[in-house]
Length: 162
Image (tube, rainbow, N blue to C red; front, side, top):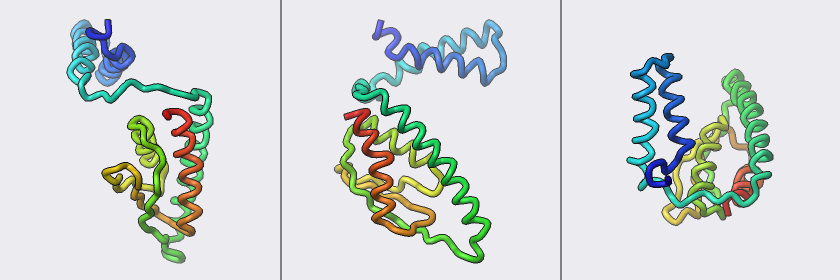
């Protein structure tokens, strides 16, 4: 079964996404959605890294809530900073964050978190995956930012994936 459907949930999601984007469940769209859901995971099966092993699933909810809180507060902070940029310009800069996280799935999740949280941009990951270069929109204290980043995002991801 895994040879025909290497990722059954992905196949289903792609088919549903196709039908949703086309706003139609005509026979032609059903057929195209089924072909897309069947063929895409087969063609990309070699690109998938090793299977995901989640060690502590309960930590996922805690991380989700932390990221949600940070998204809301960061949006407010960035919006306030943009509105007051003429009075106090933001102190942006690059921060080198030493990483202990090595799992490819954890690093990919960390990259998505950096993309979602306003004010941070994933700039570069060293070849040995030990240092992450982030651009931070408004940086008060670099050491405090690194500690917050590691405790809020990296440690829970290490609990989940490693």
